Length: 60
Image (tube, rainbow, N blue to C red; front, top):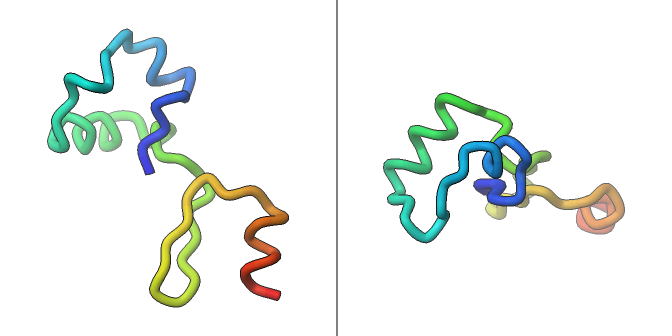
């Protein structure tokens, strides 16, 4: 769910390979735009960053 391609992440100049889970969580808490959106729960599955057509296909 973390958006490593986000301009906000790129501006930080961090290497994703060096981030720990705790480090990623800390970044999300400081900068919520680093979470891929939308985040949608359908049944027992969670989808993030899905496009509209994909989500429509799941619920129709």
